[in-house]
Image (cartoon, rainbow, N blue to C red):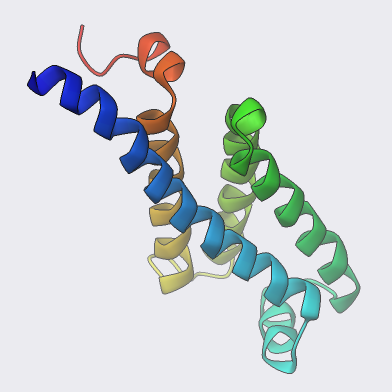
Length: 131
């Protein structure tokens, strides 16, 4: 009985975690696309020209939407992981090791894959946590 409960609750837990990740990523994409003055200062600090904001916002938006759709969730997770890895690398290059943006990216990446793992039975079969 507990196994059935776990099998039924696991996808819902994954959907909740994934929804939180999608919400955070969509908020980030929107802030990049709207490009307020506070975002301009962050771009300048990282060395990215302001002209790249629309492209970066669009890339994050597309990756997030791919992750949000069940049929493309795995490729979306891979794409978002690449985006987050780039953000972590950018802050690492600036000497901001262990900075809040790096930690947020790392936590989002872990939650991204954790949510996908919980909601996708095929992924759990392909990558079992136990032998």
